[in-house]
Every structure is written in C-alpha cells, then in structure tokens.
Length: 194
Image 1: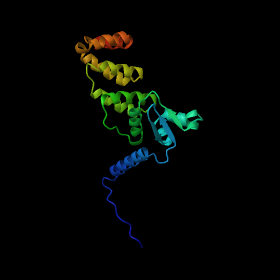
Image 2: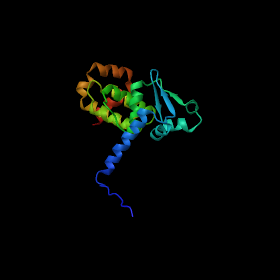
Image 3: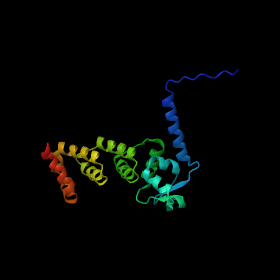
Image 4: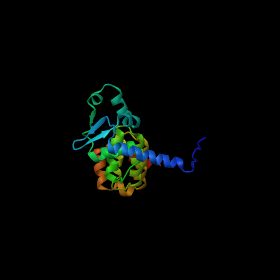
C-alpha cells in the first residue's frame, strides 16, 4: 500500500489564490491560446474571450452572438489608449491594479464604465475618492455624473459641500458651473438641504 503524503492545510487557500492570480497573469502576458485581439490605435493585445466574457457583460454580449468582433477575432478599441487597455486587461486577469495614478485611475474608471466591469470601476472610484482635492473634485463629479454612478457622485458632492468655501469660490467651479449647470445646481442645492 502506498502512503499518501500529508499536506499542511494552514494558509493553503491564500497560497492557492496567489498562485491562481500568477497563473492567470502569465496566461495574459504570454498570450498562450489567446483567441481574440484588442486593438488600440497604437498597440494590439492578445486576450482570451472566455476571460473577457467572465469579467465583462459587454464583452460577453459581443462574443456570444455572431457579431463582427467574434467573426473577425479582434475588437477595435480606438477610444482608449494602450496603457488603459493594458491595465484593464491585467485587472480582468488578476483582479489587481499596479502603480495606479490619478490620470490612469480616471481613464480606467471610464473604461470600466464602458465595459461594465463594476469591480474595476469601484476600485477606481475608491482610489479617486482617497485622492480628492478641491482642485480635482469638479473633474471627478463630471465623471461620476456621466456614468450615472450615483453613489460615487454623492461622495464627491459631499466632499465639495464640506469644502464649499474653497471649491465654490474657485475658478474651476466657475467653469464647472458654466459647462455643467445641472450638476452644479444639484450640488449647491445640497448645501441648503443640510
């Protein structure tokens, strides 16, 4: 009778998750058995339609029907830059973000909204919330409003209201009111609701 080796099960789950994440990262970076190409204006990225479908209902709809992208084997993503697509794909494969900065978080939030990757959008909104300032809050408010992200919009509006003297007197807010009058009025109205 052969003896069965014994394994220490403590910590195994986190090791397995870490290993799975690394395996999927290698799958993405090496492009092994990839069956779809995402094309930006400057770069192309090999990907796996199964992973894209699992992470995005937009990709799932795109590849489930006989749409041109499925038939052609590629998707043109000309409205996103290569760095954003690279970061989005890395997130889709590994559920992690690397070296996130303000600009990349804004662009990833847009991409996550477009492809309905809600967990990515939430991670980006959390990052943006942590890095809000009176000078960038207007940009984030426009973003949240445009994507109908009411929870994030409320967070940004609260941030602005708590700093109303700094924000409402700024040149940035004056431009914001001119270009986004409805959201500006809605935000200012919240001051009197308190």
